[in-house]
Length: 260
Image (cartoon, rainbow, N blue to C red; front, side, top):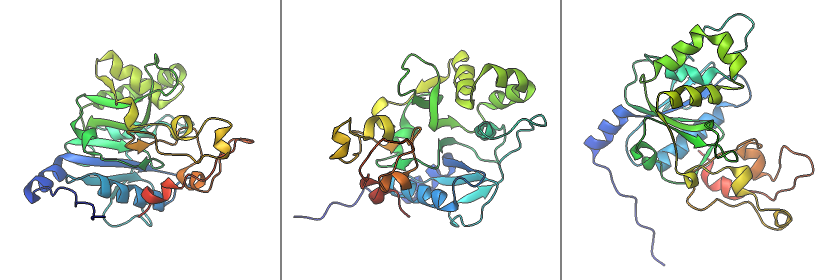
């Protein structure tokens, strides 16, 4: 048996150039996810993105986040008093001037598990890319766990929300419905190739009754596995679900990828 070849080396100058224009963004607020989620996300990106990148976390608490991650406060949404910001926070990433960042951003949820190369996410054509809904294929609304856009290119998304917040919140049930509808009307909405971002719930858990003897597996061609309406990676690794009487074996493959 021979050792696996080293990954191709990216010229240093190209790495610096990519670091200036390729950004990984994540957001952490509240207490649901600790700093270890940001740290593991950074480590997975570092292993799977061959070109240079800049990693920024928009957060209300940078404590415990590794030094390689640039932490910035979440831009204020300026919502009317009494309307909770939770659920709409992602719109802050569409600020016209996001701390002077310039280039293309891949916005990732904290509970995803990266299992394949990320470079294609920056190379794939499209002005705004999001995951197509896993079940309702004809629906415009996608899953925002993995989305890509040019930083500062869509400030009207946030501006329209701020100027029409009552109407938006009464018309759309969540941020992804509003975001997809708004960008679709402008002809900017695109979707990732379906195999790239599978759902752990829909594509990773064996069908009943084989789930009792078969462990969850990484779906073919997957690059980022999304924990869509499921427990987080830590629970799936322990063989736990968030639905009673629904059994899974341990998703042992998570330990290989979801680590610092």
